Image 1 (tube, rainbow, N blue to C red):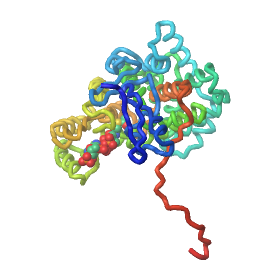
Image 2: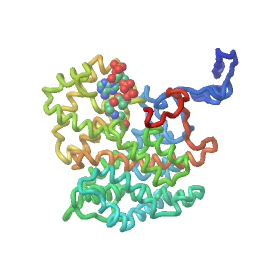
Image 3: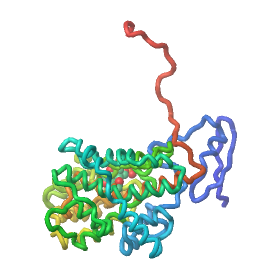
Length: 422
Ligand code: ACO
């Protein structure tokens, strides 16, 4: 059977045949048929907008790989900084490269004092930490005029380093500001996750528990990339105009802020809190099914239709965290919900399974993070993924400024009506 597709325009009888490669055929086939013919694809459900060699995802089989490495192996054996290097460079670092990379990131964790004293201090006392982070990412770029030099590899590498190193510092700063605690400076003798936990929680003689440090690192690994999701697409779209990476990352973080994307674990915790007791689970499920209630948050995924491999890892991590922190009281409700939903034809028929957010909120809560910080925790590691895609985009000769077409459904041309005549 030939690996081609033939499209016929029945209006003209014109036919075009193009190759199918990796399950994709070029939209240029449509342009060849008729340059004024467009494909209507809201939410890009059936559109591959780029070639990418970073993350492989098979939703039917529940497979997620970064640069070919299964997420399960990376979560078990790697560290976030090693994974960030892998995403950005395509290969795992050797010992010397890893030591250099860790040292480079560590030596870029501090931020300009004016960011804190003049910028972050200017927020209202009850500003949402994610709103603060989004703005801070864009503001950070104003401190580095070389960031505009996106054609220079040394400059791009420098900005990548700065963004990966400084995002946890900004994130912790936004949190400490929102609760009125003094800012804790980065500690260069700590690992990436331990430094973040220290900047978050240091009061008195706080010491990072190594088990929680490892759990934080695993969560960072799981969230580091997820191919062309909403936030990464925002990064690519804004990056395609050759905006600097700080501005592009702020756009990506803005997309992540939405409850259908990075905000879902916050919604899971609210939902579990509302359910309140395992006895209320069956009635809640009935409300979801009848459409009387909300959706079952943390269930379902646009791409994963059998299981989300990250959810399996995160459930295991949840138990490891609870051994240190004590069990999150919402866990029993979550387990009951999962049990009931996974045996109910409504969820089975629609291929709805727990996604990464179903358990991550419970872990974050057990670690002491307020719900408003959940999306911020997602943004920290996703910075590596965003930047890997930004770098790939800039090196892709087939890419241009993003500019989709539209299906115009408005009125035809009409004469302007003066105000007195309306
Ligand atoms: N609870 C109940 N029913 C659901 C759920 C859910 N969580 N998700 C989907 N459905 C139902 C829909 O009502 C629809 O039913 P119908 O065919 O009878 O109309 C069917 O399943 C298909 O749903 P769609 O909305 O078409 O699926 P889509 O792929 O567009 O949505 C999404 C994916 C947004 C993740 C959806 O499953 C959802 O809203 N889940 C809850 C929010 C959530 O957990 N988001 C996190 C995603 S992971 C991330 O961003 C990191």
